[in-house]
Length: 436
Image (tube, rainbow, N blue to C red):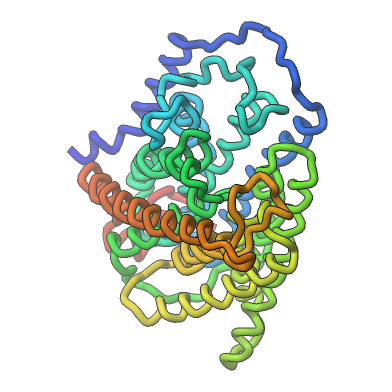
């Protein structure tokens, strides 16, 4: 039964090929009015920048694991680029941005097989760029989110099971969160929740799914090792930092002052977090390390993501420092528990995203972004902070509980963990018949 059901991803790919003949989605050639060449050029660039983050994540994670698991860990990120892209074209974009169903998820038929996308009317929150470009930009966010989870169950998950889980996670966790947060009729959007580029949608969802994964898959048989290639970690961090400018500044949806603000706050928050991590390590008696610098930089990038287009530069530095210290403490606390989150995805991405969401409720300013309805606590207003706190609690319950259920469903379809002998041999050989 498990062997037959594990062929589901392949069967879905075959079905997709058939659907391309039944629903070719031929454009009508209609002219689009009001598009901005400058905005379109910037968003084309930003879309490419966000895509490079996933290979960057592959190097970032791949350098941290045991040498016998480098290829398998990196492939788990790369395969998301293939899987999610196909799913996105078939029904994924519709689930995230189709006509709202109760503010929770999009109608899967709205843009089924990218119907009316190539020459459709621009998205209402991105009126100066083609709808197809908006769809491709958002696709890159959907790609990297499940890839982020892989660091939690690295070195012990079956590749086939991983692909099944990615499919389920996208449908039942990512798409509803993206719709609720970024669609004008979405539940969280209507409540006034601010998430500029993915604090809830990307990092909290991935972080809570990572914690659920680490608990469900239990500890590795060899839970400690030296990182295989710290140079890979450095390379991956550089690619992530570079791509993150598209991630955050691109979320302004145009070549404008807000994009410049988001780019600047992204730079300063990450830099401050990198310094805070190694300085805090120094306070604890540790030497400054390449690994610590890289992890700190990424935590800063995570934390500024929801706030990038809402806060000032000094406040972005505060966000970077606070998130770095909190995640550093949580990494140490996690190491004292029985939870084997291999690469500390939850303490860094999950907690970093939560800290960023809360601090958005503290530092968000109408002076930076006049479009926001309320300002943060530091300006004497409490509504936004309470809204952000409520969203954090609800999204945490939804992402953790939903991921836990999906992991159990996946394990029923096809076992999540490799056999003990396969884990000892290494996933590169046991899952892919390849080695470094």
